[in-house]
Image (cartoon, rainbow, N blue to C red; front, top):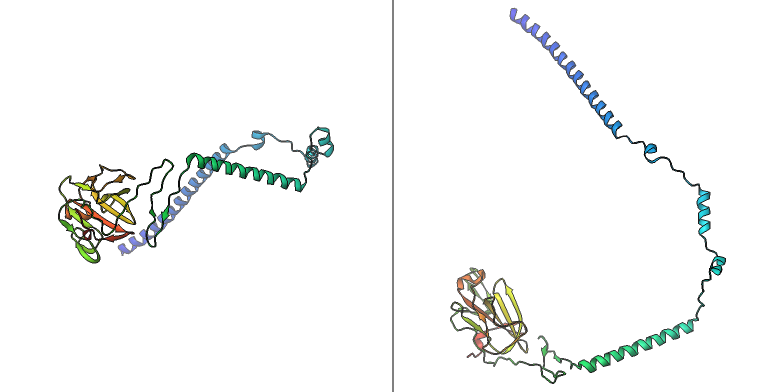
Length: 293
């Protein structure tokens, strides 16, 4: 019985306690809100700017005064006549066309004169281009102004080439069937031959021609392309950067091109070698079909 009375008393006390807690929460919230509002009001008063006090007042012109200013800016014919300005006479259309025609004829005569003088001074003979079907243009040597002849090259299936380096073929030419590439671990076509070489072994030109391109390729490293004319090119890869030739230079058969470098990561398992490729009209040809010295 005593326990029941205790819990009844406790429940009543708990109710009043909760009510008191709510009242205290409302009072505290109201005080905080009023304090924030007072703070905002003070900030607003501090930042308030009286525009009249800051910029004073301005006297605005009325519309009538503005129109009067515009009228003062209007220029009349009397003003032009009194200013002493000369008025150009209108020219007839026929006279204008005639003047333009004379100017055009004079300009044409000057252009012809300049062209004749330039040709007389330089006198360059045009470079003859003989185009073949499905092949790159072949440049034929023609005489220049000083009487010299542009050097030409000859290359064909019967040309006896210089083997760029003498050694074992570690990866053979195969344009129409797949061969196994042990570095890439896959079967693929191979448009060139890879010839094993010793450290710093020299690489020499297969035939006479002009150095067309010197570039650096991911697969073949430092690569030299020699144009032999008639659509024929030879390509040499895996070279050191210090080359013995320059781009645009004419090289003789057997002339030193450069030396063997470390192979790229795409052919690392082949060891040191020279990448040697022959093209005819952009298509690979087996270098082994040529006789070589």
